Length: 322
Ligand code: AHR
View 1 (cartoon, protein in one colour):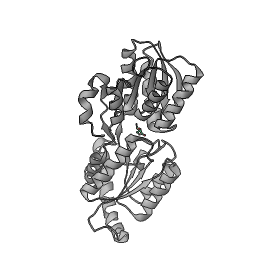
View 2: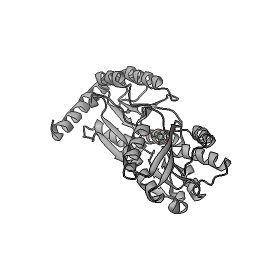
View 3: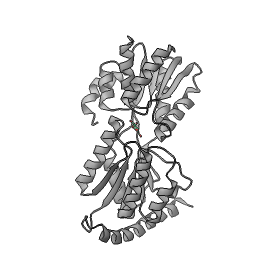
């Protein structure tokens, strides 16, 4: 199919949806005739990044007068599936999904499609055979984030390091892709070795626990790559308690760019962070509104991922929005 036809197809699909929505609105009863009603299924609140993402989406909905039906799955994908089904039953205009894991969405997304409700994925991708089951994904390129982290670390360590990798939630797209990008880039540096690779579920407490067990195991390492800042912050606590100086004896790089990471860089305890911006609210509702007007949107809307080093942290920390 040509790009033009694909775009026209998406626009036509939305117009059909808009007509259906007009009928559904009668059923909802709690929204004014022209008010947009959006269901948002959020994974949970495992990290400060995710709390910032939730706030951004809620704030932007309120600012634009969108009625947002918010569901926090508390880390349980089954609750996300149930939330989507409930949004379908309620006949919302659009569904926003931040999926915990990549797989397991086919059936419920098909139900949304059959009900002619467009699904916009935010921050994490899904793995489905039929990619018409969602309209677009708004996210960072996680493979590129992992690649950037490896490139930075190889330079910092002069091409030789024993690395502990703290991985995100097993089965999630950021954990899969940040590992993939990192490992691919490391192939260029044969003396950069991952000596431990373990999940800490994107959580600060688990980052600390995993690092404590790595230290207890006696394995030798001089670098840490964490798939998010919160796990790196937990690891920093464990390193300090063991008498090591994070940022000096052990070089650390992580991903997200949250305020806590900038504070740790200012304190000299974290060496760098790759930004993964969680403030997706404005972009998300711009996209939903565009679709509603029948305009085309790309299948992937990329959020840029710049890298920030310790040397710039003091200068930048006050301008950080999350
Ligand atoms: O999907 C994005 C990731 O999920 C963030 O990097 C992490 O902090 C969050 O929990």
